[in-house]
Length: 185
Length: 164
Image (cartoon, rainbow over all chains, first blue to last red; front, side):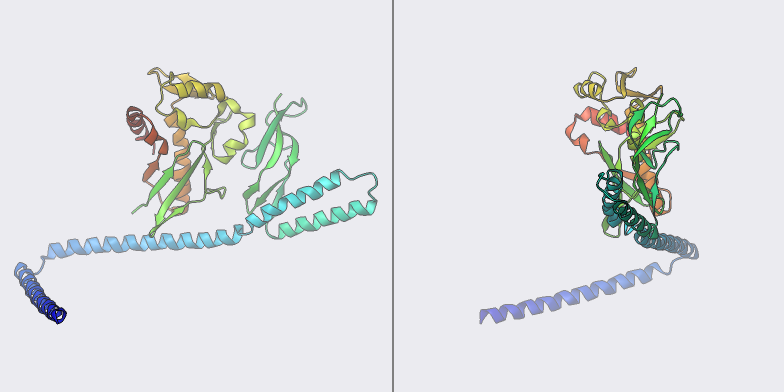
C-alpha cells in the first residue's frame, strides 16, 4: 500500500499549502488596511482614468459597429460581383456573334441573338451592373484601360479612339474596365 | 486609441491589414481589391495615380509610370541591380548627387522612397477609410531587407522614417 500513503501525504501537503496561502491573504488584507483609503485626489485621478477608458471603449465599439454595418452593406452590394464578372464573357460572346454573323444567317437568327443579349443586359441591370462604353469621351484610368495608342487628327490628345471591349461597373465599383485605344497625335 | 496597421510593401503588389480581435484582417481598397499594384504614375495634369488606375494608363504614359521601385530603394546608381533595371524599365533612372539611384518622372527628380511613399499613403488611406479614424502608426514589412546588405538596410530605415 505505499501508493495510498503517498496520496495521503500529498493531501496533508496540500492542506498545509492552503493554510499558508490563507495566512498570506490575511497578511495582504492587513497591509492594505494599514495603507488606508486612497485620498480624494487619488480617487479623482482613478476616476478620470476610468472615464477615459470608458470613452475609448465606447468609441471603439461605435467604430466597430459602423464598420460592421458598412461591411454588411458592401457584402449585399458586391456579393454578386464575382458571379456577374464570370458572366461577362457570355455577353462578350453574344456581341462577337452579332458582329460576325455568317452570310447564311437569317434575319431571325440575328434578332434572336439581339433579344438574348438585351434580356441578359436587363438582368445585369437589375443588380446594378452598368456598362461602360466610352465613345468620344476623355480617357479616364479610373474606368478605362488603355490597350494601345492611336493617331487620329480629328480627335483630341488623350481622348478615346476605339473601344475594344465594353467595361462594367457595379454600384460605382469597376468590375471590368473598358479596354480602349487612346489618341496621341 | 488609433489602431496600428501593417503594410506589406511589395515589388509588384502591396497589401494592408489590421488586427481585429485576435485575427488579422486584410483591408480591401476602394476598388475592392485586397492587394494594390505598387505602380505610381505622374500624369500631365500633375496628378499622382496609385494602384490600378496607374496600371491602366501605363501604355499611354510609360516614361512617367513607375513600378518595381522597391528594387531601387537604398541602392547606388552603380549597383548591378540598378543597371540591369535601367535597361529594362521605360522610366528614367538617374544618378543623384550622393550617388544613389533616383528616378525621373514629369521632369522631376524623385528618390525611390519618395515614390514608394505614394503607395504607403494609398495603403494608409485605405486603412483609414475602413477604420474610420486617422492612422498614425504602421508596421512595415519589407521582406527584401532580410536578404540585402546591412548598410543598405540601415540607409533605408533612415529614409523611410519620415514617410508615414
